[in-house]
Length: 202
Image (cartoon, rainbow, N blue to C red):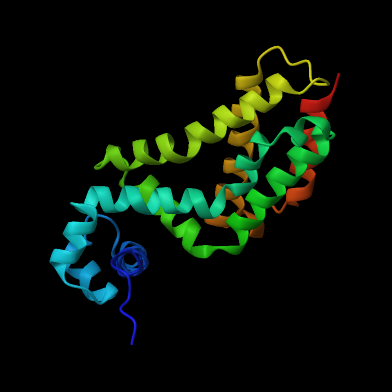
């Protein structure tokens, strides 16, 4: 029987640890989650968790980076040249629709965001890790896109991106995380349509 390559075994353990860590962080919050709990949930030894990630903060950061790979491939696709040849309304609408679909369909993602926001006072490094790994690259890529597109004539592309992202984040928080959809319902398509109209208006 062939031996499993060490790299494959290591990748399998890493995936198991990240899955176990997400489960424990969502269940207990950041402060109450221990490396012992993560190890037990992942089915590995505590020494293995430490050897892969070093400490709890690095493990949490790794989860954020894993989230980036999973959730923001649509935005990263803007680096492809063909994006500049397409109607910006179509491109921006697709990006915002994908982000909204992810946020609305993935309760674990919303709960993870609650942890980051809720723990940001005691553990500001968690919020900073999210900003550095998720918000900052997204803002930079979208700003580059708005600056580069030949049909867009925006006075301040970066501020425009922040208005767009801020609107989408607030919409998700109000409607999905604060149950606003039961009190002040609004279709996401209307928000996306309004934003794309404002950005692409000449």
